[in-house]
Image (tube, rainbow, N blue to C red):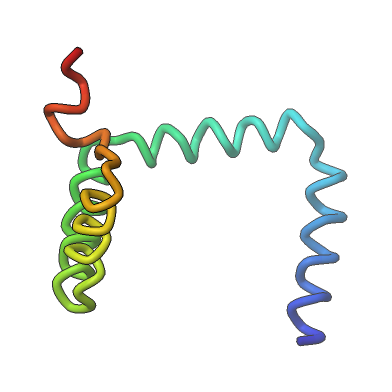
Length: 80
């Protein structure tokens, strides 16, 4: 626990010294990587595999449907 608190404190100090500009640069790079189609595809595959192993994917989907909510990835969601 001490190591975590120490790491968080060091990260905070170093982040504060780097400033907002560096933070924005890191976030732009993160978003560029996260929005890349290859990364999105890999994340989808990983999400599907985890859902298969845990059964959470189907449960979440059925719960959302039971509550009458629509998923943004559902083609019917975007139809007006």
